[in-house]
Length: 105
Image 1 (spheres, rainbow, N blue to C red):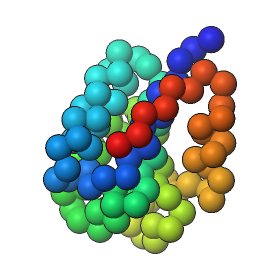
Image 2 (cartoon, rainbow, N blue to C red; image 1 turned 90 degrees about the horizontal axis):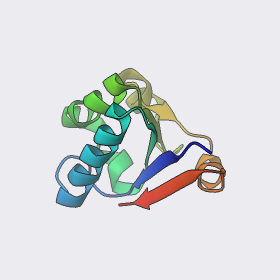
Image 3 (cartoon, rainbow, N blue to C red; image 1 turned 45 degrees about the horizontal axis):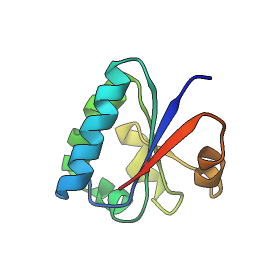
Image 4 (tube, one colour; image 1 turned 180 degrees about the vertical axis):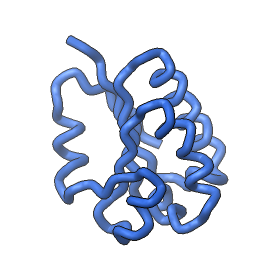
């Protein structure tokens, strides 16, 4: 079974040291051809309004990672940066999918 990595980001992806570190880990896994999904919620999703969030996510998106934002994020904030809005039950579905290794930050 192929491992898939899910990174649930709740902290500010621009300024929180743990969140920045976890994004680097996700990028490294993706560069090693692993399947990586980053799910932004809470503070991580709220900073999508800031232009620096696109800069933080650009390497992941360019490497082919899937980046999803909680449905509470307004549509105009996610789509332009390559971030997809997730359905309300998307996180539960991802967490219960076979072969998913989840990490929370």
